Length: 177
Image (cartoon, rainbow, N blue to C red; front, side, top):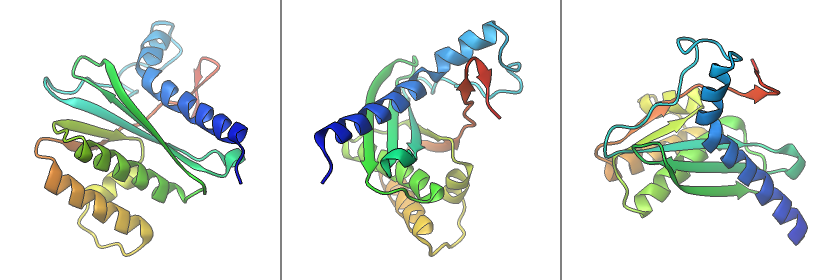
């Protein structure tokens, strides 16, 4: 049985991950002014969604010390203002591709349940994004999750998209490779 203290530590860890993801935009701008980052032409900068749209950033974490997979979902409006977030965690460490695809699935399901549309879903997993846009058959667990994502997306969203974005990891003021 998991103690209340361990659950609190797990949630605290995941909350920090979401907070870091939500604040990434301001950190990048600040560091660029201090010339710690490469020029804007080599770093993909966070872009505002189109007028009337929202951006849904999805990130998955695999903290081994907790033996869990955590998913953070962060929504911003067309002015870039944060307005909604959700944290999920699973009591096992999934393979990275499966965990990332579960992040997309849960974000799509959540937005569908809330009857949102006009959303740019943005994640840092090129494998997941490419598989989502591919029509190739994949009978693995990953492929089944991607199929479920496509089903939700095509039946629930009319003016939305799923995009890959390269995230920049920062450690002590310097970008990590």
